[in-house]
Length: 171
Length: 342
Image (tube, rainbow over all chains, first blue to last red; front, side, top):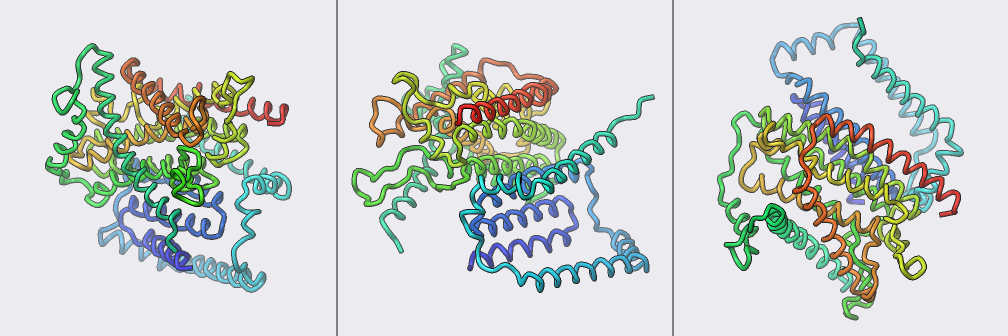
C-alpha cells in the first residue's frame, strides 16, 4: 500500500509540474516520469504486461516523438511578461470561459457518474487473467474485436492524413 | 524476513553489477587488442602484463580529468543524460537469466535462479528499457547546446527508433516459437538435441530472425558499421562531443554494457542460453559465457572489418530491407507454428 501512495504521488506531482513548466522539454520529461509512475501502479495491480506496454508505447515510442517535435521546432520558452499577459487575456475572453466551464462541467458529470454508477473497482484484479498475455490477446480478438479493428482503422486514417499533409504539392 | 535465499539474491545482484562493470572494462581491452591484431599492430602492452591493466589506467585518468560543461548547456539535463544512459544499460541486464537454478553447492535449501529479477514478461522489459535508453542520447544531444551534439543525438535516436521495429519483430518471432515472454522459459525450450546431434537452438529454426536481431542489435547499440552518431568526419564525436571526465565515461560504459546485454539476450533467445553438451547443468553458466563471448567477438570483428555506411543507406536498409524481411519472417514463423503446432 505504501508503494501505491509513492507511485500515485509521483504521478500526480509530475502531471501537475508538466503544465507548470516554462520549458516544453521539461514538460515532456515530466510526462514520461508520470507515465513511469502509472506503470508502477499497473505492476502493483498485478498486471505486468500492461505496465511494460505502457512504458514501450507511451514512455518509449510516443514521448520520443513529442520530444523530437519540441526539440526540432525549438519551441520558445514562455517566460516574457507579454507572453503571460497575452495568455491570461486569451483565457479571460468570454467565449473561452464558456467553453472551459462547459468542459469542466462535463468532466465533473462524467466523473461523478463513473464513480457512483459502478461503485468503483476495489481490490486487485484477478491476477491470472490480467497478467496472462494469452488471455489479453484472446479478449482483444473475440469480445473486443470490433473496438480493436475500429482503433486500427483510426490509426491508419491518421497515418494517411499525416502523409497527405506532409507531401509537397507537385506543380 | 531475512532468509538465506534473499541474502543470496542480494549477493547475486551485487555480483552481476560488478561483473557488468568488469565486462565493460574487459571489452575495452579486448576491443583494442583485437583491433590491433586485425590491423597488424600490438595494441596496449605497457600497463600490467600484456597491457591487461590498461582499462584501469584509463578509468583513473578519466576520473582525474576536469568535468567541463559548456556555458550554454542546460545544467540539469546535461547532468542527467549520462545517468539515464548508464542506468538503462544496467537495468536491461536485470531480467536476463544466465544459468540454471543452483543451490550454491548445497548451501541453500531452495534453489536460486541465476537472474537478478525473474519477470514473466522479461522479453518486453528488455525491449522497454532499450526504448528508454534513447532518452539519454537525445537529451545529451539537446542539452549540450552544440550543433554537433544535437545532430548526433537526433541521428542516433532516429536510427534507434527505425531499427527498434525490426528488433521487436525479430523478438516476436522467437516469442511465437517459445510460446512465452519469459526468457527462462524460452531457454528451457531449447534444451536437448535433434537426433542427438544438432542442439535444439532457435537459431536453426530462425536463421533470418537471428540475422535481423543481430543487425538491429548493432544499430541499437550504435556500433560500426552503424555508428553514425559518432561519425568523426561529420559530427566530431556526436552526442557526447561536449562531455568530459566521468560523464563521458558513463556513455562509454553504457555502450559496452549494452553490447554485453544484446549478446546475452541473443544467447538466451537463439543460442540455447546455458544449455550445451559436456557440462552438467550446474555449470551451464560457462556455456553461457562462452556463447556471449563468441557473439561479442563477432561484434568487434564486424566493427574493424566493415566501413561505415552512409546515413541514407542506413535508413534505406532499415526501412526497406530489414523491416519487410522481419515482417515476412514473423508471418512465416506464425504460419509454421500454426501448421506444425509449435
